[in-house]
View 1 (cartoon, one colour):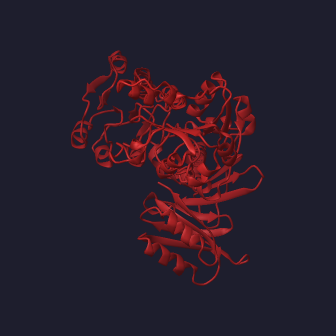
View 2 (cartoon, rainbow, N blue to C red):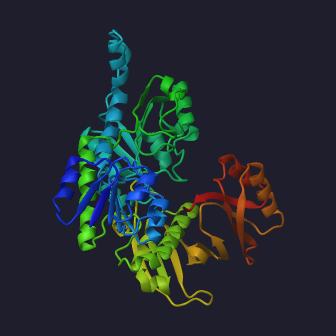
View 3 (cartoon, rainbow, N blue to C red):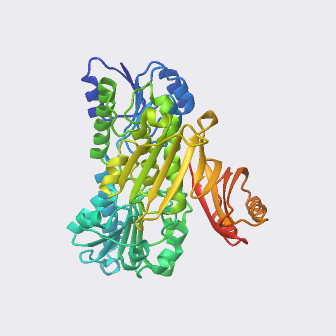
Length: 529
């Protein structure tokens, strides 16, 4: 079996591959797209880091490829959908960088509190400004953590070692589980009001984008310290600048940015009280070695034993079944993601019903895909079909799966039901249509046939004339092109919903304008892959 390694890999990772005489290892780091497409034809496995771009074109040239192993967390450089359709498993190492990133967050917090970078720069300039750099102790202070995933929990543990009081906001973690971790679970508003320092460890989603903004900063204590080692965009960088200039913020430390590399004219580069690092969260020798060894072990285990570990796209099914099942996995994931983004429900129970092909091909895999779609909207580490049930159990979310009977209209169907803390439940059902496209056929009490794809505007409104036209005009004014609109009506309640497929995300100011339009009850922008 041939293993192509197209990015730089640690010596330990290469040595582990070389131990297996039945593997032909081809080490060609730095391959561009054309070169990778030319070399991948007879490879059984591909091992990469972030440099290689595994595009649809590359995958089409892969005649034998069975698995892609990404040494690291992010798989943005892999066309996962194209790989899934070809039955190629995409694996990553979701926890390999966790300790390193958590330690970097703590290091940034300490640097802010004691003004270490500024004091170092002063001394290198030949000065001795002892009184200028008086810092503050962290012991006894309250640290607020946005997101208690793997990294957030490590940060919490380290902070408790510093004798800090730890509070956290996590939308899918139960208070009981947080208590077991020794952390007080609070609302996001409570966290903003109570914390002396705040650190983010959450993915970048519609819910978390700009979660720290002008309104949030206004609620915070004067002098609060802010740290972000998660994703650029979780903090509104403009709001950070204004908070620093006004004196409300005591300091800001960032390892991630909306635009990377950071533009030379960025205002944060010119302000005091700011510590910046160039996305170093995962950059330690130990982490690089760890992720290399982990991904090599996973790839070898899959090639020799068929074992799938840390897959971002594939369930534990045979290669023959995987291409047939892939469209239903995508459908279930999008149904779950749709509910999570639109309903803002904190899940306590998830039930997935499969009818027809999804039940026969792999109902449990479909269930895991739906759970991953829901929980993936809230967590920093990627949630996939393999990890979804474990993540749910870890957060006290009950998961159930059942096979149903054929509906009047549909022989093959996936239904996702999510129950919140109050017992209220939300249901979304869908089918696979032409070209394996995911379609929403039922949502709440509405019958629809809406495409679940890309950027979508979800509208709740009174069933009155003129609403569709008014919203269309607003979108047009903001240069948002509409590709499709699907409408559903509840005649008994005189209410309607609609899903608008658009080519680009709906801007915040356009959403605000739509929400103020006559007869519009609610408007939500979602992203469905």
